[in-house]
Length: 91
Image (tube, rainbow, N blue to C red; front, top):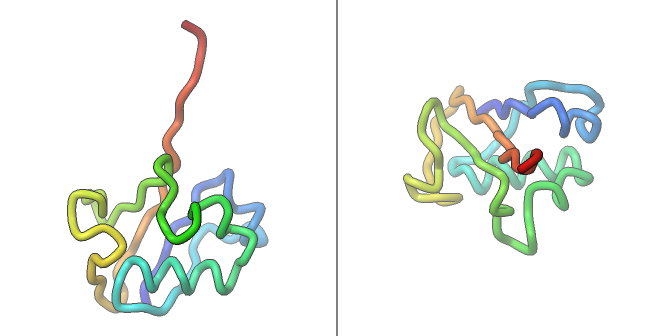
């Protein structure tokens, strides 16, 4: 099993859990496992079957978008982090 670190703003949809154990051999399968366990997360992470553009997923220091995206393979015990992009502010 891999583990996904949930950012603070999304923990309201995981019962407050910061880390969720997930199954899957790829990032996409791990995220599918996550949303099966916590269905309310789907709309925050995905638009149809694609990861939302403002949602970044990292394995260690590597952004999966610069690897194989959702098809990036992961090993048992791997740690993933969801990092939402932040925008806005005063101009």
